[in-house]
Length: 278
Image (cartoon, rainbow, N blue to C red; front, side):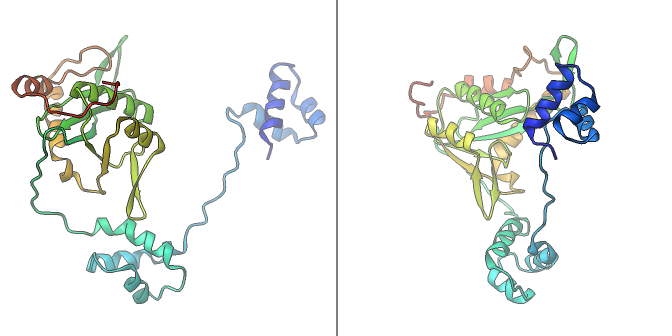
């Protein structure tokens, strides 16, 4: 396989110098097929190692069977029952990853929050095409927030699910709040964080974002949509609004009447200020 430097030289000789495949192959001492692949390929060569898998993959069906029987069974007990002879660390990590899927759901839970304490965040995806301007339509995601106490609901349409777009929409939502809540509640979004090994892991970009603001963060476990019931209901309201033909104001800004109603009917929550940012 070519290294990146040779790949770049092949393309320079072909495009800038106008040399043919045979001449380049003779000058750089590489095969002609290699030169052809470098000329045609749009990306530099990369080494891709085939995943080897893990020893736990072989026993995962047994892990699932025992967890379905008893979701709280310790990993050490499962290891004894399946005859595990390898290291316990990798088995414990896989059990911690699978266990939340087999825990029973809480049948009923009602949560409340003090003013400025909690904000729930979620991505909502319109089910209909949205006019984006210049005769273009699309279904870009919408970052929806909901304050736990006052029910203020800002909604910001963003270009993609990339980290910079989500954090940019997050910043606009905080400006709509007029401050920073003490804590934010989030789904497992790749740009925000994921549960691994039985504990949440936030991305570096999000950690820097919330660190600048001095804001706490809680990452919901997989399949725990009830924890964000307030913002989920707001998503349903937006779905009905758009499906009924609600207008989109400017490319990228979705007008949410829920925010105006809540803001007009209640006093704003006492969020703590984000330094000189807000």
